[in-house]
Structures are given as C-alpha cells and as structure tokens.
Length: 200
Image (cartoon, rainbow, N blue to C red; front, side, top):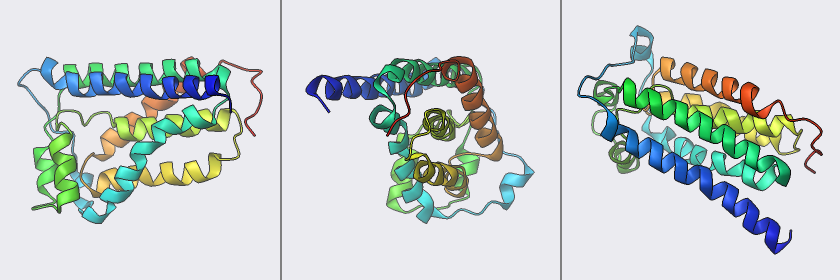
C-alpha cells in the first residue's frame, strides 16, 4: 500500500466519523422536550446482561472496516452512503427524540463499562439504531465486492443486534428500523455501482 493510498483510506475513514460525531451529538441540542419511549411489551422479556457491553463496544470498530477493505474507487460512494444513513438517523433523532431512561433502568446499577456507555450515549438517540444500521451497511458493502473478509465481519455484525438489546441500549423497534434504513441506503446509493474489481 502506497503512502497516497494510506492517506486516502485514512481520509475516508475519518470523514464519516466526523459526520457521525456532529450528527449524533448535535441532534440532542435540536430536539424538543417531548420524548417518546420506543419500547414495547416484547422488550420487557429481554434481560439485561451487562457483560455484552464488550461485544457492543467491539461493534464500534465495524464502521471503519470498509476504509481498509473496500477498493479505493468505492470509498467515496461508501462515504456518501454513510452520510445518508447518519443524516437520516440524525433527522429522526431531532424530530422524534426518545426517552431511554425506562429502558436503561432495567439494568439497575450497571457495571462501570456499561455506565460509561450510558453517560456518553444520549438516551434521545434510540430510534433508529445507528449502531445496528452501520453494522448492517458495512456487511452489505463488503458483500457487494465479495471481500474474503465478509464472513468474519458478518459474524461480528450479526451479534450487534443481540448486544444492543441485552445491554438495554436499544429496543426491538430500534434494531428493525436501523437495519431497514441501512438496506434502503445501500440499495439507493451504494449498490448501483458495478464493475469494481473484487477486493483480494
């Protein structure tokens, strides 16, 4: 990998991350006081298992993987897809802020790693799950180019919906909405590009 390619990949990794920080932490400042609880009766049967916070945190590296594995010509399109996903979720966060306090109360007095997650993650940004949405989008992008790393990434991505539910970061509705949004963005922005060489 040349120095130029390394710089390009770093740029396309950092740019979506900056967009995420701006949207995710900016949305709570744009919300109204009216908040809604996205949990339903089925969510009450999901136990709190704070040990899954480590799997949840491992999922935070997933959005950076395409910058390493996708062919360089596809990275701008991937960044646009990321931006569309983050922008759409941010708009929903701003217009329909959630109240995750009841959901998180199921964990009682959480251990320090989960407590830190709760402190850093706004409870108004539950629906849709951007955590699950980004994980889903990563898998779809790698599958598109038939990367040999798709299988292990799929495994890591598939446990993210379970992790977000068990640490009470999201509800079933959040997970479904995040996945649906990722599929919509992939089909509308990323999948239309063809003729790209397969990543070795």
